[in-house]
Image 1 (cartoon, rainbow, N blue to C red):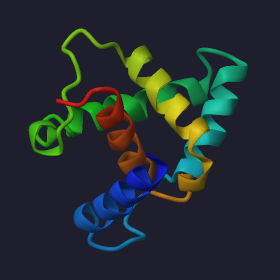
Image 2: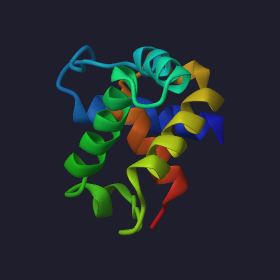
Image 3: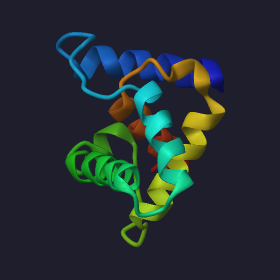
Length: 113
């Protein structure tokens, strides 16, 4: 399963990024923000993480069926954050990958069509 996820992450990064450096946040950055957000709910980092998750969710709406991601309409941003956080913590070997790709893979694993 980890090999499949790693291959999927690499393929997604190559397909959707014109350059491998064309992203702002890595999993490394996000795990740090998540840890700081977990220290004090409602702080700046909590807002950053929730905003990131919301942005990935909303911007991926068009790609969902093509990517095989079927997030239920009643899923909350809190649920998506928990899924993304759990996925990152369970896969530290991918923290150097783009955070948006990692989030999409986490959502695909949790909500396949």
